[in-house]
Image (cartoon, rainbow, N blue to C red):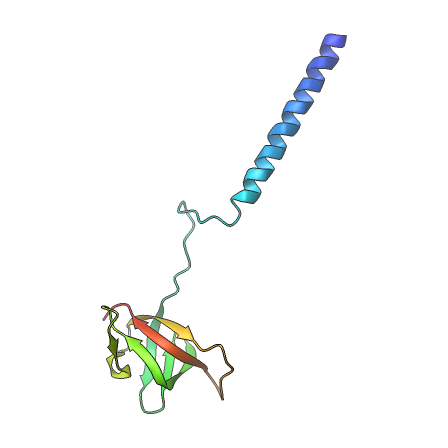
Amino acid sequence: MKSIILKKFVLYIASVFLISSSLVLAQSNEGAISTEGDSVEDLSKVVDYIDNNTGTLILNDFIYKMKLNTKVYDQQKKVTNRYALRRGQRVIIEVSKQGSEGPGRLIDSIFILDK
């Protein structure tokens, strides 16, 4: 009888240990990036429309405004001008942290990824 109680107790301790260790592992991997089936969010945007006269830029159906001193970088990370932007290009943008005047968010920098 004591042998059965001892085996049940050991089994109970082992199961508690296994469950608690799996919970700790699950919590530690919560913020990890997995390449199996998961995809990392693509931060690039596609230029849908550009109007250099008004400084309006539509990226992925969102309206942005380019400031007069918005820096535009080409694929080699060299500074170019806003006229290098074309429809269909993939870009990464840095948006101004201050509030924008009117519709659209203000863009500080644009990095062209492809032609």
